[in-house]
Amino acid sequence: MKRILLMVLRNLWFVPYGWFKLCYTAAHVEKYTEEERYQILKMIDRRANIGGRITIDAYGVENIPEQDGFMFFPNHQGLYDVLAILEVCPRPFSVVMKKEVENVPFLKQVFACMKAIPLDRNDLRQGLQVIKQVAEEVKENNIAVWLTPAVNIHRNPLCGRNFEYYSEDPLVAGKSGAAMVRGMQSEHIGASVKHFCCNNKETNRKDSDSRVSERALREIYLKAFEIIVKEADPYTIMSSYNLINGVQASENKDLLTGILRGEWDFKGMVTTDWWTHGEHYRETKAGNDIKMANGYEERVQEAFEKGYITRDEIALCAKRILTMILRMD
Image (cartoon, rainbow, N blue to C red):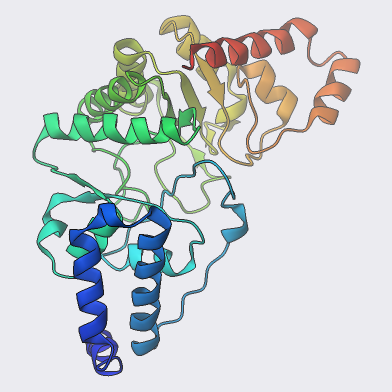
């Protein structure tokens, strides 16, 4: 509240003009280009932040492309998140917002200027329509694969991505995730279901070892993925960072080939999570078709020359990648 009062008091002379400009722009969005609306919002946002003595530190802005589309997946902490990103993001963006925000003054006008998409979390049908609408925008911005849904199980309230995951119940997570995949892929936007699997905490997530029994693995941690694969046929699956019973998930052939493709008959492509600690050629042998964000072709070449991986294993991954590309519209 102190910050809000500072924002107002230190911009007292600016508030009438800024409020009028914001309300007028929100009521006449079609009169302005997207860039013009964005610059108006940035100007108001910057004045508010200066008044409230708020400093925004941004890292990774250089990764936002100058052309084509991009997507943010921020760890949502509160209503200020969008305003913080607004100050530092060099290009216009929009958001999916909860419908209740439409009744909050100032945010209501800001989101109207951004042409934000309201989501009624109590209306499943409307939620599916929102997914399709976002998928259409993703497609228009030349993005072929949407890295979602995330269906890891709620096991610890301190997990930093529980906001992104669906439930502690694998049936709810699986059915919800399958509905989202169907909605996205109805617009020929590939889904990437993640993080496969047992990646249920953020602390040390790249090196932690999830010790789990076969029964718990099957009934809790794999079940949501199984439902989605069998009911929605996702284009891609993303393997997780962590180890499972001492084996890197991205190098786990029993998981990626035996269960995913052998038992569930998954026909799509598997990608690693970004910069995993797994060895590239072992990931390829296990059934990971792509290593993100960049692979180590020289290591795969060396492994091939030493006989650790075969040409057929490499060719099979290439075939699955090309098959996925051909599914795109």
